[in-house]
Image (tube, rainbow, N blue to C red; front, side, top):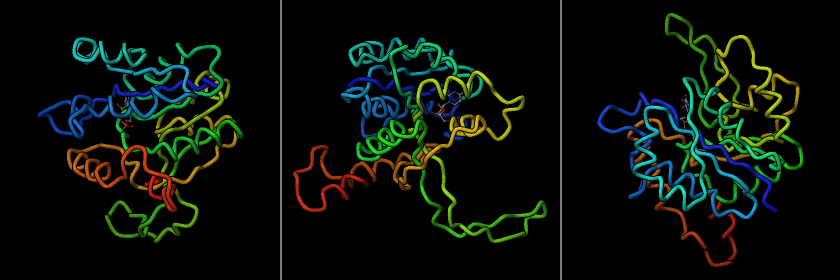
Length: 245
Ligand code: C5P
């Protein structure tokens, strides 16, 4: 059943990406990153609405260059704001009333697999709030102002939050209706939901669902996509595991 509205925030400035080309228009294996990300969702049977959030500065260019594609894909375009919070809030205002769940997924995470998207959608349907997250792999150090190590932080139970982050529509609406006074430290949507007291589940993902931040990440993302089996792998032993990464 189609009951999930998907919000794709793409209204960031992409300042760490370099000035030669805006990140939103940079290509991954021949197609802009944000289109690749949208393609993860638009043909799913459980998605009822897809909203792409674009900055005012990019709006005209997106409409001119990609309006036809986006229209064909059934994607609605919405104007974002100064902070990610403002962009998501603008999109939440136009989410269909009949959507049961709202999934928020960074436009710059084009390598999420169907398997992890299925898993986080299923968990959110069960619990009301779930996000993808990747367990930390390295040795974690907390560093003092002087640049020396204060402590080695045990990495057990530490995860890096990713997207999709998926919530019952009322849960995320309530979180956005009651924002904290300061947005300092609020870097994802789960953080706002956590503040309301609603538990947020973790669905384990891995580093391949990377966020493209710098140009080097494009090289990595291309390698990840290339190393994956074809979109519809033949059923065979181990195919699920392969599709996961
Ligand atoms: O800045 P950050 O890395 O958290 O951005 C994550 C996602 O949120 C990106 O896809 C970016 O385009 C989007 N974003 C947005 N509006 C902003 C800031 C970020 O839609 N004002």
